[in-house]
Image (cartoon, rainbow, N blue to C red):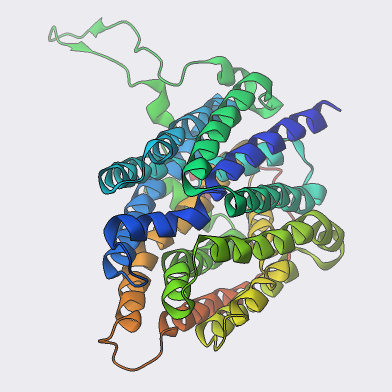
Length: 444
């Protein structure tokens, strides 16, 4: 009963956090365009800035997500969740106050800095928390439910944005993000695997100084730095299991495609079909409802019988297919039809995380999830550098040939690569009974 209580508090925290994050998405494109290019439906500056922001955020998350995941194995999930949930409030408060050009640039800077730490950290720590208390047999279903909770927050947040004014949207989002941080601190309990370290401060004071023979003082290293994962640690983790390394490759190409969609799709729809905030919200509602139903009902039912490997391949195959359809959209109703493919697309993330989770020991879930998140973040650095200029070029009058959706089609091909790699993953017995170490890596 206690573990289900812990899960329920985690789900509420994730719901509130994602509600606040997702409800601003339909409005942020219009806010950006209004601040940078008032009265226009096509703005290369907005596309480039969005892509630049994603790349910088990716640089930060490549470093921070594995570190946070690794530290959470020692100091507890709750302690590490506090930081991203708290600082993510700042950029929402800025746009809640004003959305003029100066305030937009302030938001842009703070959003970039805070997301370097927050982006991916909350979901990474949440997945590790679930893995701590759920058996391997039920883990894929539990990950699917966690994704379903996030999707339901997406639906409710998007629905709220659909009927609220832009100003009120950011005000409500700022309040709910504060509520998420407060709820987590009050109600969420650390898992048993976090041990007594969860009650210790992250940065311990150094021990008393000692004097050597030369009369010089020296201090021992602060304990926390022993937990910073090196490149060798991550390479060791990747080499520890062929299945894990294959999952990491899939994560890279899938994130490369997803980040490209984030950087390009909304601007493509605005330029191609003149979408506004309400139409973006309608589109996202369809995606959210379809994804929520799938994650809460279909994944828990299918995972025990079909297996994570097949669910992953199905999700990626449908994902690349619907990107191809987006790219050749010939009428305004086509994007709405494409959005319903989310029923199958959402199979991929929880299946991928479950596959990775089963390849490490119980005390290394944070490290494993952080490694996958870090690889995904690295892809998110590269993706906007490729797809933002490509989108801006083919939406402009100087395009080499007339194909506004060319960048979206390229994203579809990247997703196709992820699908091909996923078909090479074979189900293997979980290896969660042993701890991966540098010594075992060297022996391998």
